[in-house]
Image 1 (spheres, rainbow, N blue to C red):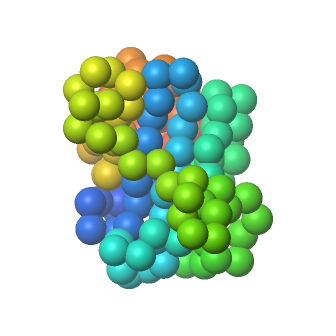
Image 2: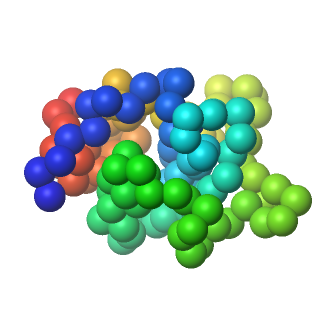
Image 3: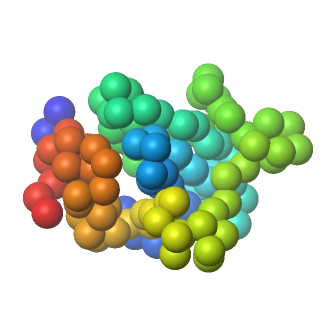
Length: 121
């Protein structure tokens, strides 16, 4: 795929949480409202192509409520929301934009994800 994701910014309802175990948690809102998180899924380093494909589908307007793999749960009991201390202690990095993702290069498999998105650090 040669599509680029340069248009993602903090206001679009996109959040990627990187954990120090090498995992990636993608959180998406129902466009265009960020305040309503509707979909969350965890990916390991072997699933980066699926992560990329899910981001592209969301950018293209696909509704995450119609997707399989929603890890939130009925009452949002599985919602991942790292605390300030979690982030400061190196457990997580939160990515809200393309620039944030580029800045996170060097964290886990982010360099591989940047390649898949055709981005440069």
